[in-house]
Amino acid sequence: SVVPNTVIDYEAGGDIGAGSTSDRCILQSEFDFIQTLLPLKSSFDAACNDDGGNAMCPEFASPSRSFLHTDVSGKNVYMNPPYCRIQQWIKHYLRCKARSPCNTSACIVIPAWTGKHRKLLAGMQMLHRYPTGHVLFTAPSTDGTRHVMPGIPWPVEVWYDAPRREMASLR
Image 1 (cartoon, rainbow, N blue to C red):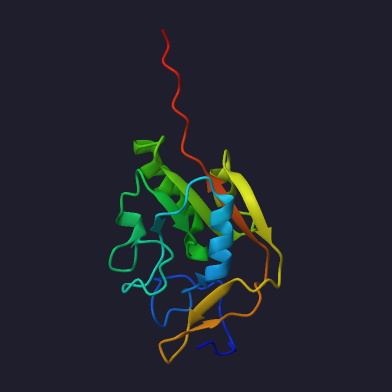
Image 2: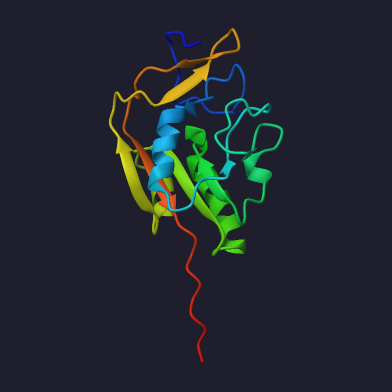
């Protein structure tokens, strides 16, 4: 059941998990929409609770299986990172992609903020931009269910990093 939300700190960082103010899970309908924009469907969710209750993909990272310590080479990653760690998470993904560039991709959902992380998006494609006020996320409730959060306080962008095409062999 969905209950109205009162106060949410969208900028909170830290671990994702029950009781954490940084636990934002995209609405299933919005995730499904984003998947229609991708040539490769997401198979690994980078930020979930330990029990996977908010996972959008069959495989996922969580506080006990940290994304930052998971090799996602060869996976199609869906990433909605903690907003205070966007740069760190994109850098980790790019390091993993360097190991298997032709088999690794990512869909990255982040606020349309300026910052050092923007340069890491070079070569990626912005697929969609959600306007301020759009209802996009859920958060955990004290009773163990999830509730719909209020509309987003700033625009949110959806970026796609495709696998690198294999270069034709030189003869």
